[in-house]
Image (cartoon, rainbow, N blue to C red; front, side):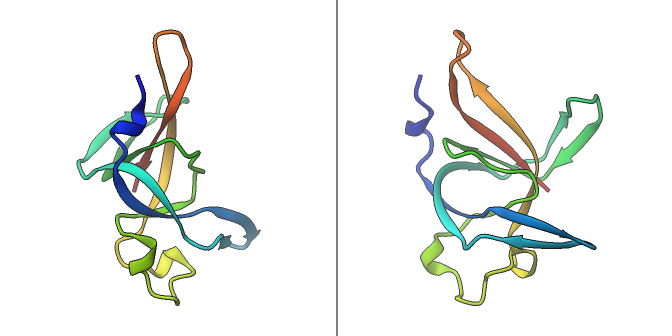
Length: 115
């Protein structure tokens, strides 16, 4: 099974570049990913057994990083001042990432859960 046939939506992704301490974070410039955005609330278990609630999930072939941000919009529609996703309306932070595997444990893609 190939998840690329499900990933047809254009989403913007800001990768977490560095955590400068004191709560300051820097992000890479927004890039466009093909993904499947699901705007439904889910309760998921973390590896340490905690329950967290996500407001949306994103299925993608690209590797998402915890603390990064997604927005359900094409990169070309973003403002040039949208360099810090914390200040961008509609951008959501990645709070958990899971690998999507097939029955032979081959990596197909990733599921990112968003705050």
